[in-house]
Structures are given as C-alpha cells and as structure tokens.
Length: 157
Ligand SMILES: Nc1ncnc2c1ncn2[C@@H]1O[C@H](COP(=O)(O)OP(=O)(O)OP(=O)(O)O)[C@@H](O)[C@H]1O
Ligand SMILES: [Mg+2]
Image (spheres, protein in one colour):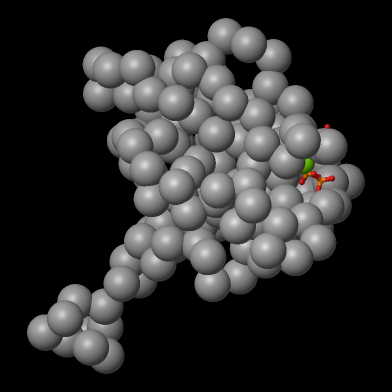
C-alpha cells in the first residue's frame, strides 16, 4: 500500500478540482473506490474526475440503475468510464448479475461509490479515495493506491 495523499477541501468546487486532478492521472483499466458517508462529496469529486477525463456530459449519481457509462479520454485514447453507485445493491448475487467483474477487470475506468457493498469483488489493485466531513463545508480527502503484495514479498514489504 502506498502512502496516502491527504487534502482538506473547503468547498464543493475545491473537491471537484481535486477530482479533476485525479481524473487527469487515470489510465484505462483503473478502478477507483470512493468511500464516505452520505453527503461526504463522492459524487461531487467524481464529477471532477469525469471533467478531468474530458467528459462534457452532466454527471449525476446513477441512483436506480447503479451504473452510468460515459466516454472519456485518457493517455490520448478514448476510454469507457463507468460510474457505479452501489448504495442500493442488495446482494453479491446482484453484483454478479450486473457483470461487475467484467467492468472491474476490463479496459474501462471504474469510479465506484459505496464500494463497501462490493466486498471481495473489488480488484486488489485499485485506488481508494476516502472523504470525511469535518465541517459543513470542509472535507478531509485521502487518496491512496492499493496493490496486491509482491509474490516475493508476501508480507507486502
Ligand atoms: N468541501 C465540500 N466538498 C464536497 N461537497 C461539499 C463540500 N462542502 C459542501 N458540500 C456539499 O455536500 C454535498 C455532497 O454531496 P454528494 O452528492 O457529492 O455526496 P455523496 O458522498 O455522493 O453522497 P451520497 O452518499 O448520498 O451519494 C453537496 O450538497 C455539496 O454541495
Ligand atoms: Mg453520491
């Protein structure tokens, strides 16, 4: 696990700008899990990520359908961007029925709200963003990259 990058955002605009920076770094095939309470700013940050990926569409949470799909650009190529909101996911079986593994291990970029709902189905190699309320307008935002332990160093050293 690489060390986390910590930010303090004082407004939705600042959170969106952080998202945009992240979006510009993403490569095809990457998965980013956004955790945090209701209203922590996950969708707000994902709007920025999508802007950073060159997506001009309005990005809203996919409340009932669980996944929204956009076309973005990363490293000079077109890339499918999937925005998941798993808040209403009821079972791992439902996740399977969505074909989640094909998305998570595919060529597109996956941005996932409420990743806790997906449990073990999340790929071990992913980015994680954790958003926490620390005031009406302030949020603590930690970004880090998780990677599976190297086979030669099973303890992750
Ligand atoms: N610094 C901030 N960063 C992000 N959002 C903020 C901030 N300050 C206030 N807000 C407000 O908090 C709300 C965040 O809503 P948002 O839908 O992004 O949260 P969410 O984490 O996606 O919630 P949910 O779990 O319901 O999907 C918005 O109304 C936004 O205007
Ligand atoms: Mg949301």
